[in-house]
Amino acid sequence: MVSKTNISILLSSLLLIILIYSGAVKLPKDSLTALIPEKEVSSFTGKIISNPVKSSDSYYTAKIKFNSVSSDKISSSANGVKIVLIPVKIIEAFYPGKLYSRNNSDSKLIPLEQGVIITCTVNSFLNKDGEASFILKKINESYFEKGFSGLFYRLRALCRIQFKRLMMLWGSAGGFLLALLSGSKEYLDSKLISCFRMSGLSHILALSGMHLSLISSLAGVVENKSALKKAGLFIRVLTIIIFVWFAGLSSSLLRALISVLIVSLCTLIHIPKINSLVLLCTTFLIHTVVCPDDLFNLAFLFSYSALAGILILSGMVKSLISGFIPSVAVDNLSASIGANIFTTPISLKVFGYFSPGGIISTLVVSPVITVFLYMGIVLLTLSLCFPAFAVLAGSLMNVIYWFISRLVEFWSFIPQVSF
Image 1 (cartoon, rainbow, N blue to C red):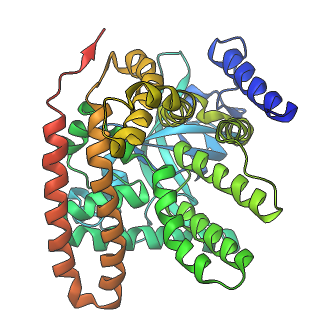
Image 2: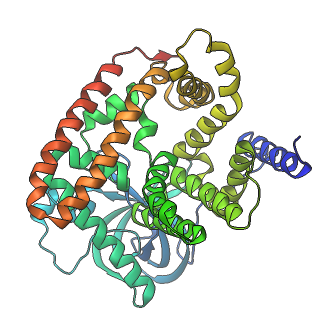
């Protein structure tokens, strides 16, 4: 029997979805408040509050929290957050092995990671909605703020750069593992990215519940051996938080993290296991409050819709196909069908096509990706302990990477359905 609380959560989520995605409720947009009109801004000082993400061959995007702005005539204090376009050559000037890093001679600047404060010149332009946007032109100064926060972000940036250096030694396999563990896709082969998209496997490249489940399983070894189960639970949660801290809060990863924290809290205070759909709806409501900017993010839409499809439809699909499909594959196939039914409308709306082959390709490729991730973490640990082992580890990882790339390339040949 469904409790009144659960019904309220389900109905609240449904109502919120209808109000937001019908356009009945308009979400506030990122804005900049200053005495200078945005289109006249020629420079600013602000803090990078999100990981720079590659949005095209020419630009990265990053959220900036503004402190001050200047025009050709005056300066003004500023407040607000906006997404800024940053040229590839500026971001990748500090990335190991990238083209622009070879010409970086300015030792005063630091890598542009989350938490860095920058002073820079910009070009402003009007986007398709008639709003002013900024393209970063030149970095004049970059630094971490003083105090604990600055040390916190400096440590994170150093860890991410050093990880990229190690993964660069592993070649293509290192670039792939880097994307799976940190969300950084700078070293991924563009052809492989296209194959993942064409074969309906893009969700594998997005940090999400699968990655947290893997990290949680590794930490669970400690929990199972622990005499104090509560201590083991804290270790598991702490491990997950450290991973999220390192990788950065993408919308799909934030969704997974909120769910993990809810389940952990329920376990800690001895609340009976909650219904999975109610958990997803509770996560959605909290996510909406914590980060409303994510609501129209593709990773957010695909993440929630895929899980909703699995929870709502997989049982029904399972009962329909159980007589025709081997029992060992029924659960995974029904989950894949449910997820694809709910995500197909989004694919059609955004891309104009969907990949029916994704139903089967997910079943085949996901287990191999899981093996790749587990081996990567083990071999990475061994390489850090025994540096001489790193070359052999890279060779082993590239063998698995070659198999994965051929597998994904094979599934990408299944025709997409366009409308």
